[in-house]
Image 1 (tube, rainbow, N blue to C red):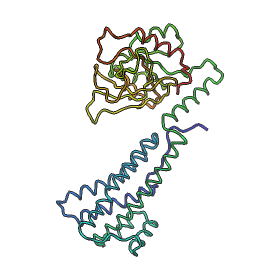
Image 2 (image 1 turned 120 degrees about the horizontal axis):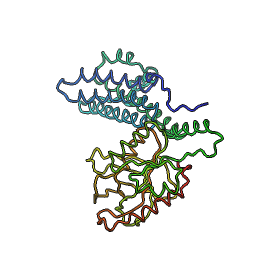
Image 3 (image 1 turned 45 degrees about the horizontal axis):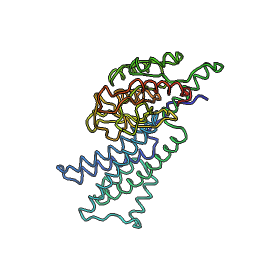
Length: 365
């Protein structure tokens, strides 16, 4: 049976945690507008926290069609929002010297049992519409605890599925391999090698001579040219991509000519809050792993990175957007900040080419 890449999720309303979150929203909307002063900013805060809990369950469930990671992240946002709302109800009771029901009290046990039996908002609205602020707040607290537990169980289940099945990219890779094997099951020469992408022809030239069978492309120098060319390639070809080139090192423990695999890329020149990082989804065995800054010009600030280049984060971002496995290998040609005359580009290119020639590219995954 063909593996499905996109999951059919069905209706989010089937989720017990969603139905309870919907009841919490309706209760909170009534509570905030009935018992808080119109000028109290807590009204908006409580209603928005309740809405965030409900809406992020909807969005997370939809995201789970292709991304377990996205589903878990959004469900965690829902969980966090409802925790914030829980604190607001507890603060309301405490600051007004009201009674929070003890767990062994008759009221607590009765509301807890009703919470286990009923999850529809209409049922709860019939109950709370004529109750006091103390009663409504306590009922909300009990339902919030139950919802938090349901969200935890759901996230635990999703996490187990991720361990068993992998993420969207892993599924896409399995399906792609399966389809390729169906089309050419007897073709022993069929290659699973990734598309090799170099910033310049200078970096690719010797490899072209030694391995004319490889699919080698030139992306250009810098993030903009790289993103444009990679987007053009991936528009028509759903194949893994491996970025290859030279790089400058911050880390003086790296020697010129050393070849490394990049495990993480980030746009180092973006301001705080926009400096997102991207992870390699292909593993190149046998090479030391490093973190890299993608820069627009030579920078002295490493910020935890060992090397810098001008293309990596752009390629990783485009590959992630298209759900295509990606990786990167770099040969050290210079140290960041040293004069151009001190660079050893010939040595770096020689070592880079030799490394690629000796890699089993069909096995990179």
